[in-house]
Image (cartoon, rainbow, N blue to C red; front, side, top):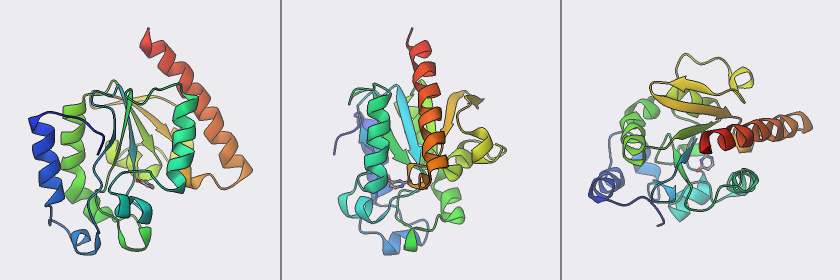
Length: 188
Ligand code: URA
C-alpha cells in the first residue's frame, strides 16, 4: 500500500491492523489505514470505509473516492502532496457511522496526524469535522471556512458521497474553489 514511512508509522499500522478494541473488528474484511504520499502537506479525513474500501484495504477507492480524486485533481495536488485517512479504520455494518467506535478509534487518527504532520487538514463531512472539532457548527455552516483547531489548520468540506443534488454539487464546487485559493496562499 502506498503510504507514509518510518518505523513509528509501520508500528502504528501494525497495531491498527491487529485492533480488536470495538465490535467493528468482527465484521471487517480488513482495516483501512491510509492512501497517499509519504510526506503529505494536505491530509483529507473521511468518515469510514465502505464496501469497496473494506475489500481493497485503502480509503476512498469506490464511488465517493472517484469524486474525491476529481476534487483533489482540481486542487492541483500531486500524488505525493496529499494523504487520505478515515476516522474509523473498520467498515461499520450497513455503512452507518458508529459514534461509539469513533471514540475508541480517535487515538489512531491523532497518532496518524502527529506522524504525518500535514500543514492542512481537510475534513470530509460532519463526522470527520466533529471528530476534529466536537464544538463545530453544522457542516452546512462550517464547510468552506478554514478553522484553526488544536494547532491544526482545518478546512471542512462536505462529504463527497453527500453530493446528490444540484445544490450540494454547487456547494462542493464553490468550497473546493475557495480551498484551492487558500491552499495557494498557504504554499507561498
Ligand atoms: N467514505 C468515507 O468516508 N471513507 C471512505 O474511505 C470511503 C467512503
